Length: 473
Ligand SMILES: *Cc1c(COP(=O)(O)O)cnc(C)c1O
Picture 1 (cartoon, rainbow, N blue to C red):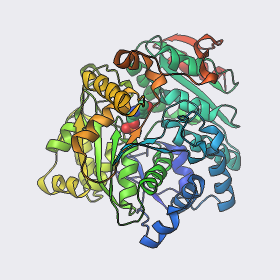
Picture 2 (tube, helix red, strand yellow):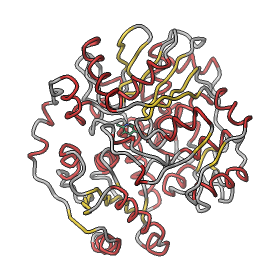
Picture 3 (cartoon, protein in one colour):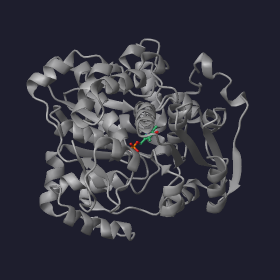
Picture 4 (cartoon, rainbow, N blue to C red):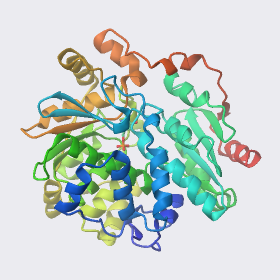
């Protein structure tokens, strides 16, 4: 399997190369040359597989430059059941991403039972083991530089801690993350993990990462890598749980289901789109946004008009406070029949801060792909956290509440799976606002905020960050 860039002007790469590359040299994103397709017979065979076997079976179709035994060992480490132990009492850790039935035809697909209580662990754990393997094989090392507003940073650090050949330099906004999220990162004492709190907002952190990555000689010399959601390895890992969820709630491959996905950078739902292209019987993929509803507007009108960071609201589902979805280019590439010339035209406008409107044929294709959307506001999140608690005795977080709202806007008489993207403990203030109680914390996390912390505090200054990397690598 070879990988191509959406912009059509980069050399084809194999999986291990794509894993370490991030953005393609032409500015595009990597995708497999074609999507493998499963037959009905394949699906029947996959139906009874464990999570680990399913992941291995799917990954093998996309990765042909890692020997099967090694790939199998990586999968078994990334998806060991003891890594996903924070699920609800009635859920089994062996399931990795168990489903929880709320009522007939309405399910939560629990993706957040991993070490940092958000769905990003599923992909990041795989990346951590994969990086270690590929770097060791090539005799290389990598300095991962990232920016986080709260969920990516902890997931990346828990996945990379103690991994040979990998160092993580994670920039976070000083004092705007929740105390819980900050403590998740700052309490890590591993030698290869460096936390840098920037006196500024998330965008300042993001700008420093971009500035460092654009300094190609520095990037080359200090082997700067990325784990943000444009990394193909993350999308690939997320394809698996769409299959797992489907098999959990159906009894044969003729049944169709709908998925609702709380969406920010379009990584998670892009994996759902690919699962559908691979033959998974998905009827609708429902894009759930919060007040930052650029994507909802696109799926209703065909008009894509990203907003600036000043026009982006800070909401109570902060991991979805995104107005320019970094993975969207992958989906549009498919939608345009993989025409890189047309894509470059569209993204020429986007990169200059502009917009584009789809022609009628492409807009029609959105419907063929099964995409629909909804947005919600703070009051909806609070109402749905409350009603899910009252009706089903289950506490959900604010992002999952955005998902429940969108799911109920569009539910038909087939199974609807809502992806649970974080556990409620991570956003306990909003949960308290809704139901007047705090979600119970697992024993291991009771005193998280009281643990010793280690982090640097820098001004929003690219040179200072570069020097820090030089001195610590
Ligand atoms: C990252 C994140 C999202 C958005 O996922 P994308 O892949 O960026 O669309 C939604 N909810 C939570 C809790 C997240 O951490």
